[in-house]
Image (tube, rainbow, N blue to C red; front, top):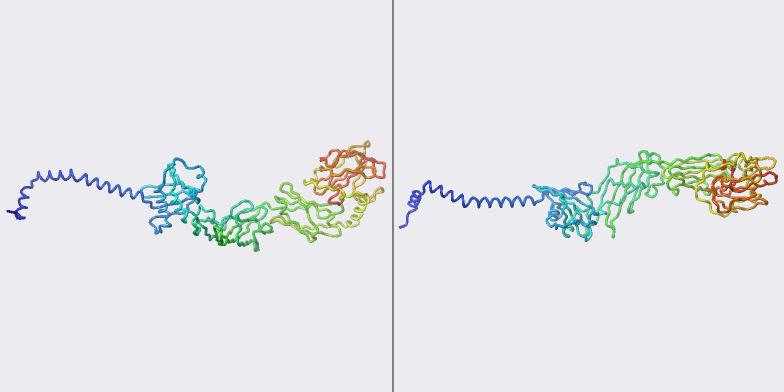
Length: 531
């Protein structure tokens, strides 16, 4: 007969003894507790594994350790623009390799820092915009290949803009090779899949940035913009100009010139970038050129030297005069430019005005004629022509080197005595175009070169010989009344080298020689050269 439920409980209680309870507990603990602990350990390990694998933040740095992008996974970020998600995928698919290809080290490296709750990892990544493989290296120096699809995932994202040369405006550079960053930029570029990405990480500069220019403000872009405007604030003066005319500006306030450049590149087919950039900076100019004129009043036979300092390119020198027929030829010696202003530019005029400009430096000059200029000029030209000595008859190219005034010598006082000077009237010579020297020793004394140069002519006038030396700068020195010529055309002579031997002076019984000096087909006073 079946037991009732109360009877069953009563019987069970009678069978439960303290001893049996203890044995039961021991059995339960022995069998079930290890299993429970093992299961808990597995669950806990799995949770810890999942937590360590989950990246919370990602930071991207350029090769100069400058932070480009930072993302916290707790932020509300769309998947396709998530730096964390991109590098979680990149990291999970890395394939180990033994060595990093040497050429990959030449790529633009990016460093990514990935943080989870348990650790921080850093990778140096070498992504590529081409079809070549991409690579990375971890902190332990182990190398990996980045899957092609993961490389594509990164380079088509906004985070890859530093890999694109077109993600920043074309460089604005000075003639001194300074690169000037923009102050305000609105810029877009095309990535590899043809979509347009807005630039976010262009380095800009505050207006307080200052640059020092040499000679002039000269700027240029690596790629010419479609439109560009330039403003110069020079003290109270505002100058609107273009890039092409900057290096010809004459500026007054050299300590704090503000420069504003606004450039625009339009969106066009075949162009991988477009946008606008504004550059706002201060500039000062060093190595200012000085203009020096040796004399501002010229008599017959005289000439003036003009000197411009701190010149590196003679083609940038500008000479302007109301007389369009006037010009100056400059020769560079180191960083100094020289030109000769002959007395002949004043023929028929009382004064000549001209302006010299180099870069941002400029100076006005006035050269005046001496009162006796006109009459003496005509007499000298007539006499030189009557004697048959015309520099224009010598067909030779002038030498291209600088002529120095202190590189000349006068005839030795021990051997010669000057009896007739250029422009001096006496009984024998009413008006001379040369200096005559009488030999104080025996006949046939050696005549030395008063200046170095190239012998361009050796010839005869009546019973005597002459030698012409081109001394550069359009200056030619004529040695006359020689009995013997010791040089031939084409020879190069230095100061003091033998030119020839003295002969009989014209219409006299005296032994000696004469020196005439011409500048650009005009005879000038020899004393300006040989003394």
